[in-house]
Image 1: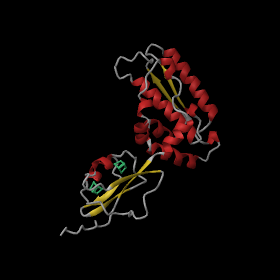
Image 2: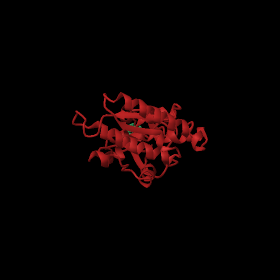
Image 3: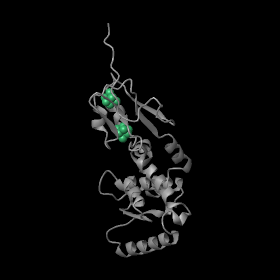
Image 4: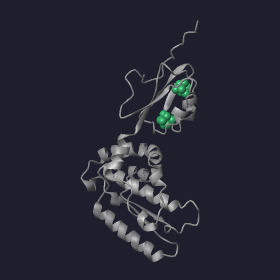
Length: 228
Ligand code: SF4
Ligand code: SF4
């Protein structure tokens, strides 16, 4: 899913994915079902930001179908040309559409976790072609995206969260309250798990920004008084 968003963020007007026939995967993982479900979710996400979902297409193909592959590519190219350039074809401001796409792209790790059951759905090949995600469900998934922040009164500057954050979205250092960079955070929740329970400094909220009391930059930790 990240690759698809990366392609659009780099100005691609359409993405075609060719996968093995459903049910004929040689591996027990049946990754083609997973890929198709990701395409279904991506199409809904494109729709959510006002882009035409037909800009992503997935077809089943075998290595012996060269002619069909050529026909599909010609057909898809024609369709994308008819849709026009990304965003402009939909009558959207390209910069605004790019900002919205980037916001959704940043949520991919969270979306993959939150929608993991439907993404792993296999079933029969015909049923799998129906999009299991409704527009309302996708809007709700996005609305439920969590915000992680660090409580400055609880942080003991152990640095565990910063070491484990996969995108270096936590600023801090020795003796400093750590701070989540909300622009860089991909909402994976790793910091929540990493913060030792005896500190419990990482907080998760849904549908709300971090409290105003959270500093924007690392500041010295609050010294705890020794108990009498
Ligand atoms: S949730 Fe925490 S670990 Fe994950 S990206 Fe955001 S700050 Fe980093
Ligand atoms: S938020 Fe938790 S894990 Fe991160 S530095 Fe502070 S105490 Fe350590």
